[in-house]
View 1: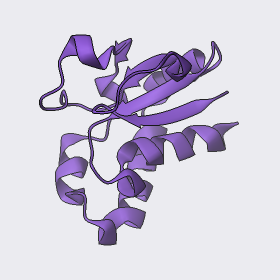
View 2 (view 1 turned 135 degrees about the horizontal axis):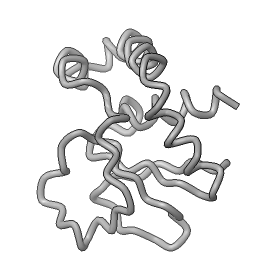
View 3 (view 1 turned 30 degrees about the vertical axis):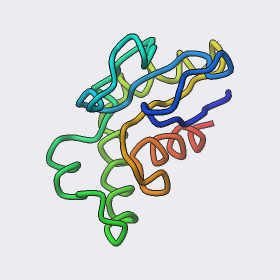
View 4 (view 1 turned 135 degrees about the vertical axis):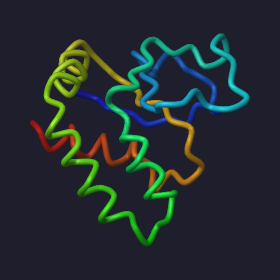
Length: 116
């Protein structure tokens, strides 16, 4: 199971495998043709209330991850769909956030890797 991370603003590459946009909102200024997203999976993104609470504040990162993991635990159907795709080959989780070290995509990758 190979999970890669990439910002939506970075060019797609063949090595990305299956590209999944994991944001609730489409990234600003990125066309669908340019992004080459295979699946826009809004249901796996953090809830709107959690996203707004976090506000990309690094000081809230640990608590954000805990709350996001709880949301994922409560959404086994969505997690199961994603795990199914992971078993098919390389997956790149695509996201729009600027801060790579504090993105929900990174938290999601960690969550998925801890399932196995």
